[in-house]
Image (cartoon, rainbow, N blue to C red; front, side, top):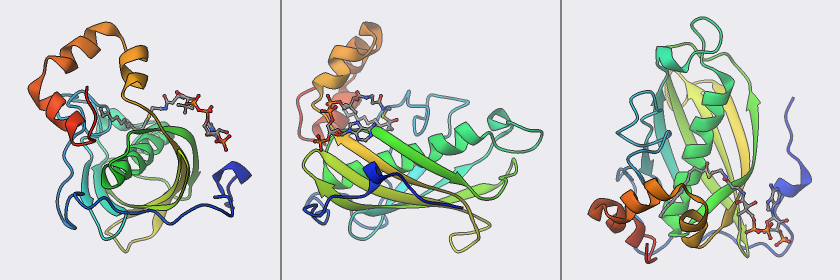
Length: 194
Ligand SMILES: CCCCCCCCCCCC(=O)SCCNC(=O)CCNC(=O)[C@H](O)C(C)(C)COP(=O)(O)OP(=O)(O)OC[C@H]1O[C@@H](n2cnc3c(N)ncnc32)[C@H](O)[C@@H]1OP(=O)(O)O
């Protein structure tokens, strides 16, 4: 069974997404937006270490290898971890729009169990944009990019200003990020002043 709530259906006046002219080229790795991010950061040993690659249009692919630290049932990935992998993949799409956005809603279907050690092949694309609202969808497949779907999600991201993080994040981490030239450079990729 699948389906999504009405708030995930773009309104009639929504527009098709427009890839930013300076978005990474198809095939290019996006890299981490923050090295402490649970989804993509290289400094989180139990994180997902998810690597996303730009696709055509406003789409991307990503891979996530399920580690023993990601278990729920014995030998199987925890559903919340799989939802995180989908969330991170969908969030990475905003790089291609050059828009800073956070997840407002994420609806996930868990279709097949995902064993530890398996690689989840994720594919995501933005389907529509309406004002600050960005609608997107993703699948995660097992055994290869054309393998059977194990998880899928629809999401609504909401565009925010960089102040969203500055005003709400714990001051220690905000200060450290602002003092990190690499982090400042990544933030500038979104054409914002950190
Ligand atoms: C430096 C680089 C770093 C880049 C960093 C990137 C990090 C990516 C990490 C991966 C992604 C994440 O996990 S992000 C972390 C998880 N998410 C969060 O923490 C978000 C927490 N929530 C919030 O802060 C807030 O609720 C917002 C920002 C989402 C929305 O608040 P707001 O800005 O006041 O906007 P608001 O007026 O309420 O809503 C705007 C429009 O969106 C709709 N809307 C809002 N929320 C929802 C919702 N849950 N479901 C349906 N619709 C919603 C409203 O109806 C409205 O529609 P209309 O009336 O206009 O039609």
